[in-house]
Length: 395
Image (cartoon, rainbow, N blue to C red; front, top):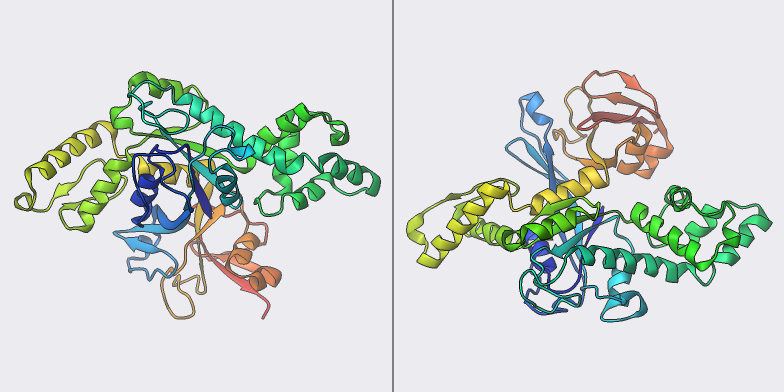
């Protein structure tokens, strides 16, 4: 699972990325600090089923702390996007190519309105951040349009003449963008275009690309620098129709670094922290932590962990499933309790889980066994959040 962190330059994308991953990324208050994409791993949280057993788990592909399972998510922080990036302005071509494999986007916006379209600093409140949402939407749509424009009519006519599924031929053209046939079909329906793509004009193709962008690369907006954002800017962002989460990546990064240094006890996503030893803090550190503490209480959290979990569990609508070898003890062949946690699309069935674990398990699937009821279920059994399941396959 790959989530792209996108936005114009100088809005706090790299700070946001560093806060989530604790990876080193170049951070500075000027445009195009990020040139090469940064990759890192963060985690989303869910209750670990081991608490039902009364025995500790032995995580293999994830982490567990205090009954909470942390499932890894790969993040990609790319170069900032400026208007007309799809035609090569700024680092646009690189930005868009880096995003091909992303399943969803976190659009980091400067909610304070303190940066212009190209990321240059301006006075707080000088820029309307909602316009950043519409321009990024436009750039990605035109990027897809540019990929399809040259061969689209040819593909549509080939589909009619050869009797081949149009969505399959188009999906082949979009290989590398992680776009499925089902998403293409949904975009055709939502675009409201004629059922015959071979007669589409450019405006109809662009309308289809806009629908495809929203379906195949869904987006959530991180209203960053919310601690200094004018209230009217937050209202403007909410009016865009996207899910908006107020964030302060700067506060989140500072708190995670302070926790790593042993200065505070802080759990990401919470509304407070505890200072380990005030005697170790200088005056400026104490004042900074006081300011962060006040904002956390009013906001509920820095919002950074919240955005990641909302894009995974709400925008992409994924659930956590635990495959095991022994459905009675919830262990693998080595006796490890609940070693693996997988993110699956809501509505996935038992065979989908088998394929997720290994292709051979999917190909040779016989049945599955529910880890809680111990009842056998078929390949089409729909998985639920936090299910524990054994896959039975032909040897």
